[in-house]
Length: 187
Ligand code: PAN
Ligand code: ZN
Image (tube, rainbow, N blue to C red; front, top):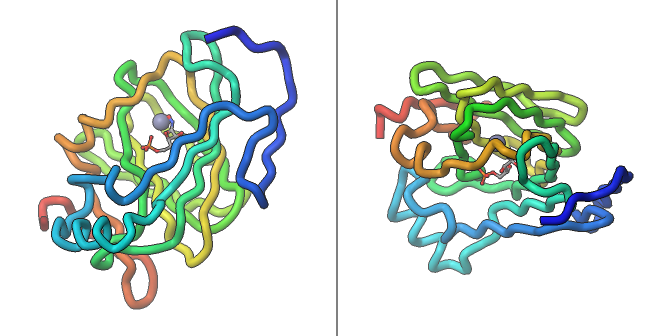
């Protein structure tokens, strides 16, 4: 990847794009295998049109040591067997910190360090901080798309196997009066 010059990057909320634009990632339900509590409901959702659950648009700043890449994630509203739509979640293998900034909609940032879980409610203007060693997953808890900016060290790496192996401590469900949490141990 080529180094980039100092620059301004604009986010177009209507189009969900960055200018100048970098790589874009689309995560459909089929990409979230093994993550929802109700496997049969997940399979059914894949069969029923395999909806887009979230997308990630990145700037052109490369994911290499000493650079500071950014991306904007947009999670669609929805739930599968009561479990709110979410990102896959990952650990940074080199245990580096990260910040998120809420842009629009209502979400949450679930963090897990292998023992404890933490929850940060995310609305526009909230900065969520993930210390080194805390795996993180984002959840849309509202009824419109939830978008946030992520800024992370270029050498952080993304370990998705860690979450498949260790879980995230808690699951986030749509309750009668708001968000409800259940322990992974209840699966
Ligand atoms: C974010 C995430 C993004 C998508 O940019 O990568 O929200 O979530 P998953 O990577 O878990 O699918 C970030 O935390 N980067 O480090
Ligand atoms: Zn991260």
